[in-house]
Length: 626
Image 1 (cartoon, one colour):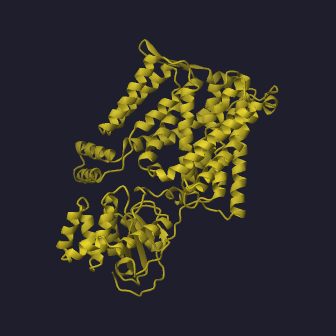
Image 2: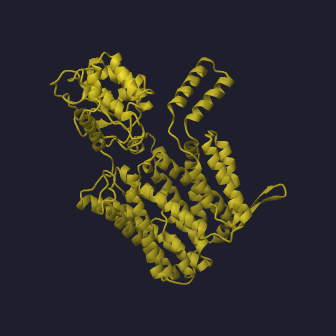
Image 3: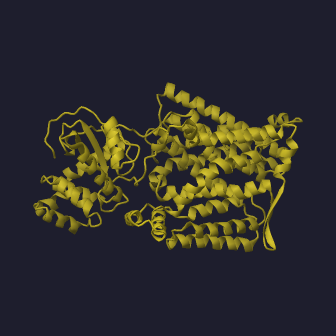
């Protein structure tokens, strides 16, 4: 009966929100990030094959030193990019993985099984195909080139060639690439690292412990984490271990937490105090209060995500994609088993491996594909996963020692990116035309129309406007949203009917019992009284509290207690939960205006605008208010 979803923002929001300025809309999408990446790679290729190719090589071999008294770091610019900037990239990936494990898709382990199996097989098959073409010699060391996927590039190409709405497929592919990233970084750190120095390695281990301690004691400021991560990076750099693993591990150790109701309320009161007394000290407290509401993990992601997408990765492409194809290099690459091992591994291996892993695990009953995602979507997404680019180019530089082999492998990575994009485009078109698989998103339409014989309705059942809320009595954001709904009702009066449906979440231990209490009160004609009381006393939802509320409302307490075990009332809640899943609801609160799910904010003003624009629908007034 209890829904397994965690409270979350709707993932469709960015995909379907209209942005007025075309350039701003482009930059805010993955296609914008991927576009900049492609431009950077093309610039590198043209530059490296132009009469000014010497300046390209000279730029990346310039030495840059940072001194700290008598000590410091000295590396050429190429290593600063690969061992410095790319650590920020992997740090952000680690942050994203930790957030998904704590608050996102990976909290529900049942949803992880299919992408986990697909991800693992989607690495084993490419590596096996690569080694089949390059079984021995130095080229065989390049097997790690074909195991990774460039997440940003993949999502960018998906935005360009995939379904018009691909929210659920993106979530599936992101979960899959999380596994790719963890394994790829582990391979980089463990397989392709140099000889290790134990002293700085010990310092790095101490830094990891310090990050865990900071998380444990609930440190909310970002500065202590950043200082420890910088020391961790320096220690890892000196240890001989590739610094990318430091970035990933550091990100994984920085906590992601759901905003607590207490902190939100404190921040709100501090902000109100600042409005009344705009003084520096009050402003400082208000700023701190607002900062504490959002976890360190999410604040660091917010600050670094744009930098890594639009600066770090394009600079990396500029530094690594510039292979000189003149003097027979391109011809040698196209005749090389190394080049074709990379191409076959990434393009064929990823498509076959991910397809077999995902569809095979579903066939064996290990899990199911996300709602809205079909077999054609999975195979096409598997093809796009053959875009290894960033991770692949990084491993090219670590695995292969000679310039000739690096050039051949780089050509393979670039060729694979083009072929994987084309294969994905063709497979998406095939899925749409012959399998009828178009959009890969959650449903937006309310699956079960409002039924006055089943639903709890406030307002005239024949009202012009309908607002449906899926709620959880233990969700603090539902309490606030329900207050917003009351404001909306006051605005529209008898023009609006408000419908409450249950979605008790597994993360809230008292939510299911509270839903049963509301239904038990409803059986005695007092649903809305209990509804309001439960939200007012949201922190007191134990059984004895609920019985006390029944007495306060003047209910027949003995009947109320019996009804808490009623299978008929439990079935009512199960029906609501089933309709929520079928309607694409993945958290609370979720609103529907008429029969369309609201994708944007759910404050009173936004809901009023939605209702004025979209909420008219015919109804069948056959029952009185319940």
